Length: 560
Image 1 (cartoon, rainbow, N blue to C red):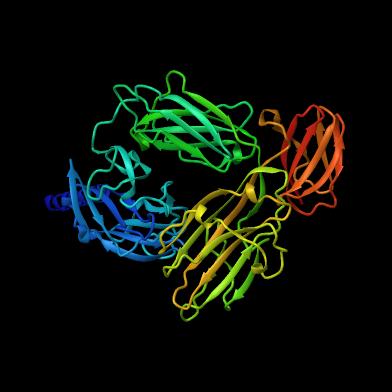
Image 2: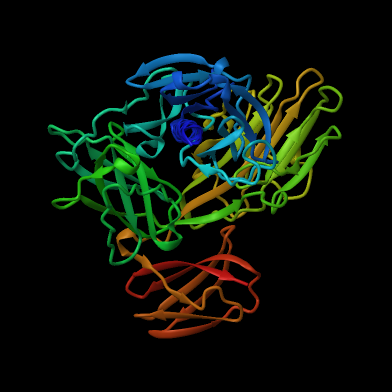
């Protein structure tokens, strides 16, 4: 009988120790660098393991995943990583792979003995499902921050906060990289910080076109924050949900429900909300916090600062996202067999692409020309776009503008002004899309303005260029100031046959196409006006009313 007890006791000991080993795999992905300005430099990833001496490092591995097909494209066991610092019982390990993909999305998985560690199939710039490898069938978790083609060399994405496990920390935007060391604002196994002492001061919101810059003076006091939570509200009666300790509020920049949230690190002092609706008021508040993840501690006593701002009355004169083709832009090939074509890249997918390579560099002159733009009646007109390029060394892309092109002939028969120098371009060698910036083209305003991308290649050099999100914006010019502008409500919206407009005074109404052409103009009376729109093509329009006393209202109309 004693033998049975001994065997049973040994079995339970082995089972107990085995369970300790399984439950004690406290390890996580801690830092990542995958993209930067120009050619990517020093791409790496970092993990943390608690009590690594209890394991064989070869049992841990990281798998890199391609988000386009969900497959593994590289992997490495941790015994081949570089050993970094040890803090308390936590040791940091890091690895420089040959390349870490910077698509949208891509990801990585941390595994032990071939099994995915819970919560460690992470992705950046979106989510996807793994189709092979240890994460097969699992949908990734987006870390919520990203690196872009403008991220400076020497920065990375990092977990910050104090704690002893992955949920105690939170991913932060690019900061100075720390391979093999604790991250900026990270304390492994450290004591938690108390609530921040104070709110920031000088909290303000400032409009710049369709962007609002929210800024503040950093919090002071005995306990400084790790970062700030900014909440935004677009309703006429703004309200904000007070955050709860231990429940991190994720970044959410989708205004479709009129609410957004964004986390900003301490020391940044501002955040720019971009691409907002025209002539709309946005309200904001800010909460400082310490720690991160499940240990996050918000300052909620007292009154959080608030600010609001109203965007400019800017109209979208023309926009082409190249989502399914070249849209309303037209290609014209002068030299060479290669032409501007559509490609399934960009954000969202879809762009215009020019490539002068066919078994070798080939001379080409290819134009991509906008539709005719009626810019009369607008001021502060800007043109902007996104772009990417790779291969070769020639610049190859020029941005031109004309007021005497006929819309169909060889563009060389017209007069074109070269405005290329007013935009910024990255060094060649990366497929990352970059914002070229905007340039004021008001000086070229006419009732028939054309903008063109001109692509050139030679017999010795041929870059590949991609352009996306070509946008012309302008201020509607009616001779009255923005202080007399209000938002116009039209219904139904979308509309198909009739449009109803309520006006508090008699005046006139104008419907303007997205390319800036005046489609309809008529008088309106005080009260409800019913307007026939059967002749309008499907699409987006700007509707504006001007009362006899000079009050102007504008709104958007979708016709289907």
